[in-house]
Image (cartoon, rainbow, N blue to C red; front, side):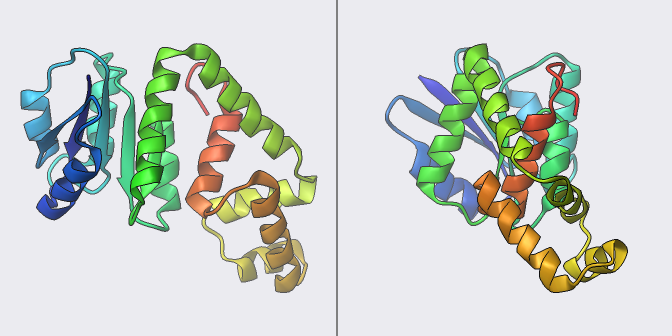
Length: 205
């Protein structure tokens, strides 16, 4: 059975995650803080971590750093808010297998966990994911790539327009084309795609 470790200080969210994930050879273990998790976690058999980015005390990112530094490579999915692009980017750079935005659907969460476990066990699947992401990014024009980098750095459209000497409407058109070409439904999803595409194999971006 796969053990899903849920690390979140929100008891209601932990409860709903347990209801969504328990069963079908999945077992859910809950922790209210990173400190609780570190005190109680024992790695045995297939496992996946669901970590809230905004834990009180040691944050979700700090926990992820701590685990990776100690050599623990259990796949981890970071839970973020809906528009936390910088947090999503930092999570992937810190070694998260994925991130999921609140509010999330059960199907999306199960898919994310399944893919994280598969990629952790099968290097070929991980490589295919990276190659697919790279081909999506390669389909962008130089101008689209430039605008995408500025969007992901947190610049609003009107600032991008001013910096590049083009109209805000043109920037918005490029943004729409970028989302369509990459198949990204949200900015954090676009950030994930770019980070995966840019990986150098050593986990560096």
